Structure formats: structure tokens, C-alpha cells
Length: 260
Image (cartoon, rainbow, N blue to C red; front, side):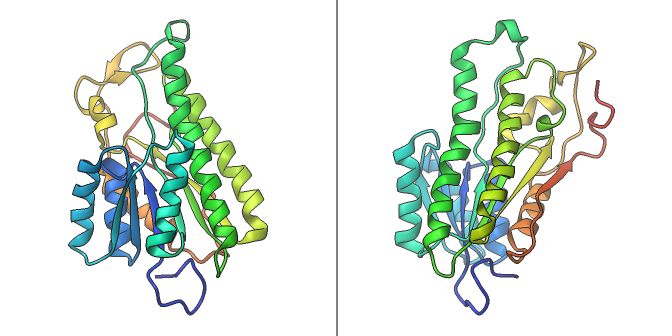
């Protein structure tokens, strides 16, 4: 494994993961632990974080569960302060926390629902990125890596998904801006755009189906969240002079290429 913290360091690199209680976050935490990382597990519910902690413990890596609401500035500040106090530095941030909403046409979307999606998917990514950059600039050796969980919706929307689609386009902007602004400080930033990973959020894809561009509703193929985790580990373990700016990991048979 290539340490992101600097050549010659024998300590375990430290990764902070949001949305670590289930789905892609939990799988990635376990995969990073197997790759030798100590992991800081952030999420809203301590019960689910404890389950991820138990998985990490089976591979002998350090796991630190921290209850955090990524939409709350003080909560995010406490998350990174705890990571520093307990583990000394932050080498990787995986901005994974995100929410969706039931599909609605534009004229049916309530402002409350719009604000909820933007608060988590955009403001949450910004707040965590800001804290990570502050830490990565100060720590010695300096630098680190930020990986944002985007979506193929950042490129091709689904019908009735204006809030989610807008939020993921914004994440792409955050990724590009952070990659540029972080360059002088050895802070790499990349994005993984996921298509149809099996998580609680995508459960309807295998059951009742999801809305298609032609108005129909059909099930779609999915991939295991563990396959996404393997891709994140690849991004996370690169040396800091290399970066995956964007990666797409998707179900081969899903209607993405040619969608619409």
C-alpha cells in the first residue's frame, strides 16, 4: 500500500468516511481497514456505526465511530477535531454521505425537499472538504486526498430528479475546484461516480423498478457495494503525485449509455 502521508511513515494512514453506517460507506470502511487504514466512521446513528466498527475490528484495524451531522458546521468541526485528537492526522476524506428523494416533476418539488437534498449532498460535502483542507494544510507531512461520492446523475439525469441531479453537478464543481486549490498543498481531490450500487437507497431498482425516460418504471441491474469500495481503495492508496480525477463504476447492463 502506498501511504498518502509521506514516504517513510510507518503509522497507519487515517481515513475519515461520512455515511459510514451502511451501504457504500460501510463497505469502503471495511475495505480501507483491510488495506491498512485506521478509519474514522462518521454518521448520524451510533448504532449503525457500531456495526461497521465491529466489521473493521475483524481485520485488526483501528475504527473510531463519531456521530456527525454533515449539514451542521459545528458537528463537522468536532468530527475532524476528534480525528486529530485520537489519531493525529487525516490522510483521506471520503465524502460519501448523501440523500435522495422520491421522483417528482419540477413543478411538484417542495422547497423543503430541495433544501434537504442540497444541505446534505452539497453543503455537507463543502463543510467536510473545508475542514479536511484545513487539517491537510497544517499537518506534517502535509497533504492528503479527498474523494467525493458523485453519481452518474452528475452527467445524465433520471426523470423527476432535479434536486438530486443538481446536487451531484455541484459535487463535480466542488471536486474540480478542490483539485485546483489543493494542488499547491499536495492535496489531491477526485470523484467516483456510481451507477446502481446495491444500497438501501437503491432498493427500488431491484423491486418495483425506477422511472425511465419513456415514462415506464422498470427494474435495473445493480452491482455490489463492495465493488465500489475496491475502486475507492484504489484511489485512496495512490501516491499523492497521482490522482484519479473522475472514475465511473456502474452496473454493466444498466441503461446509462444511451439513456433517454
